[in-house]
Length: 188
Image 1 (tube, rainbow, N blue to C red):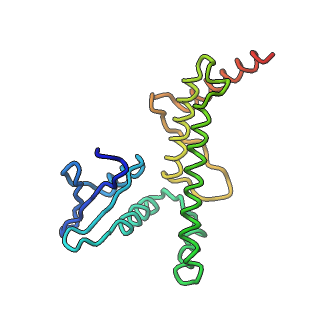
Image 2: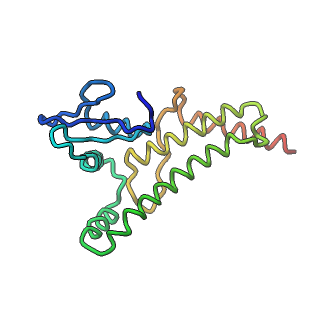
Image 3: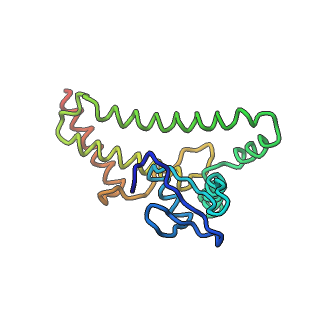
């Protein structure tokens, strides 16, 4: 892929097919969702008119996930969003939502950054493995958020996803518990 700071240009043809200008092939909405999950910005434009269709297609991706039962947006949030389209509050909502998601992303990146900074644990044996497990956990958490936790008052269950190196989450938990046990023995 090209420079990740440059949005990936997707052109929509009159046939409604979506064309990736970087790889010169047709893509689906799921492909576009994958680019976004990988951190890539996309821009979707109508080939004939030049109109920016990005918002329309992003909403369609969200609607398809919601219709498949991958509910991340609780009904009361959706209801409030509909209300904002007909009220004076609409001017505040986009900035609030944007700030909320930026805080979430910043919090995740700061947590990962703190794991890598010169902490006393960095020199301990197995720290790299612990760091890799934390990264896998964060990836599973963000995929879980994108993949369908129902909004509610209870906390989501731990995802049953595999980490990048194929270990089960239970195995990672066991290794973490073992490391914590060793750390507590060192402290005595």
